[in-house]
Amino acid sequence: MWPKPNLGNLLVRIPLVMLGGIFVAEAAIMAVFALAAQEGQNRWVEVIVDSTVLTLTVAPLLYWLIVRPLRVVADERSRLLGRVFEIQDAERQQIARDLHDEIGQSFTSLLVQMKLLEDSPTLDSAKTQARELRDLGGHVYDQIRSLARGLHPSVLDDLGLVEAVRRLVEDFEGTHDTPVTLQMAGMSKERLNRKVETTAYRIVQESLTNCAKYAHAARINVALDREPNQLTVTVADNGQGFDVAKAMQASQTTTFGLTNMRERALLLNGSLVVHSRRGDGTKVTLQLPIKS
Image (cartoon, rainbow, N blue to C red; front, side):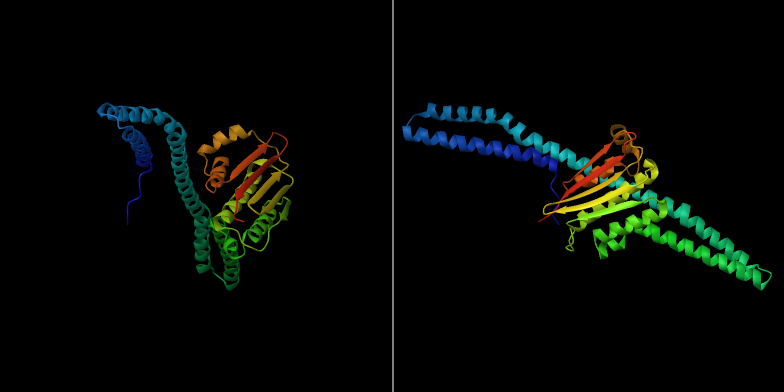
């Protein structure tokens, strides 16, 4: 397999090749005029000098119009890739904590209950311990299902974004006892690109999580609006609101934050805008381009 080209080296080589091409083209044009005029050797020296001067004159323009924008794009790409790896590492840490803190403790309780069952002096006490053991087993099963849905909901692959968001909203209402209104517009049965669906789902999931943690909202509205070339996702609440600028700075050091949500959108050439004011709720608007 061929090694991948280094983008930084390409940003140096491409302008040099272009400048060389410009020099050759200018020298060739002037040489044609010199031959047509049947001028002497001094004219050939002038051709080389004029071509060099014109090439050096074009160089700054080439830098500002091509090289500098390409460098900005390359730096932004590197930064986004770095953030992607940070997010992946943070997700792994979160999974490890969930496994240790929740499921690990539940299995410890299971072992204790099994020991009590083994040492039960009577049949009635053994039945009581067996019922408690069964209830605890059901609780562990629910924890594992919840963790699996958090990692990647199978319903998103099987039934698509609409059904996945609908079930996400139902689970949120049941868990947090907060009413959520779900609105759909233009969401046909035709599936979207998998990356688009996953990003939209994650943004809704994280927005609802933030509502539960920080907003203290009495109601939440989630809307999906599909247009021919764009998907718009909106999550709005009537909670306490916050200072967006401060939160964006603080989220640089958190596992999941507004910065991470925005970068998820940027990776698909989309945008994420957060409008919030203290005491006036929060509105998160995600826009992702889709193929017509």
